[in-house]
Image (cartoon, rainbow, N blue to C red):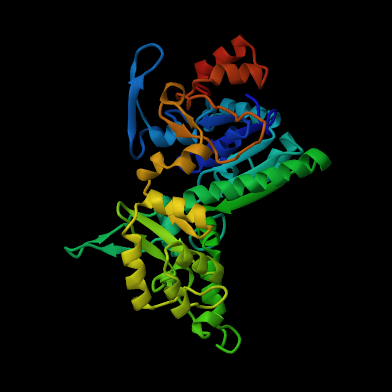
Length: 416
């Protein structure tokens, strides 16, 4: 494998969603060794969809897309940390790696004798990162949780009630389970730079709940700002200083910044700057709209102007979404496609920017990390591993064990 992190070795002790952290590092070229308990990470059977195919020997197998994506490119080693021999193997792996990732409940490694101090004894410049649900401190530290919990806790997803009065989880993007690993990967990269230049070790911990909240910093900080008097914190001048709801909640009554139905779907109109609004009106031959409602120079959404909204609704319905995007290019104004995860697959911008790796290589069609690297070819990972697939190879190549020692470890059950 090649990539920006070529030569960096990562020891990944994670299950389920936190596996995304080391997955980002794989996509950047790192060698990631996934340490699994006997029986393996049950992410292989978790959630949907489940991909059915055959192993190289023809054996049928069923694997979750989550495992295929989060653990692609990793090497799987099964080590039983409840045995003395397994603990010794893990220590040798720590000594050989640059980064140790703990993606369990907080304190997993501590309980097995691998405190930060011991990890530093084994590897003086080691970078250690713990990624958990609610973090290593606070009243929710030991609360078992799954991905939606972090968005629900942070206010990023709210319950919906159906026609029968049952409360439902709405269809929303999961933020915490992706943002947490991304923030953690950023911290690891910064610590690696310091470790390579000074030899200084580092430890950090990231909560997926924290990441979900920080991803929504604009709304949260707005609510905090609104705790101050109106004289100190107001709304936009275009709204006569009236405070709008935080974030997109304040966009609901927008008119010049709003979704509009087209002849075959929807687009998002975003003429909050006067110049874009003027260009739109000129382009559709309705300068009368600009003359009647010129608006403020910036940050003017013509909020609650239903008369104007009625006019715009009729205008947008006359063309297809693709025609409106062509219009936006021609007249240099602000209109964007409005997709669903299904329609995005056919979007030309999506297909220009993203690279798919096929099911023949990864078990399912998957997207590479969204990083355009100029002339550097992207790192193409291998298929996510079977449980313990690389145990012998890693122990030989990374730890320097000979065949006799590996066989003895297998005999005791320390590795498998």
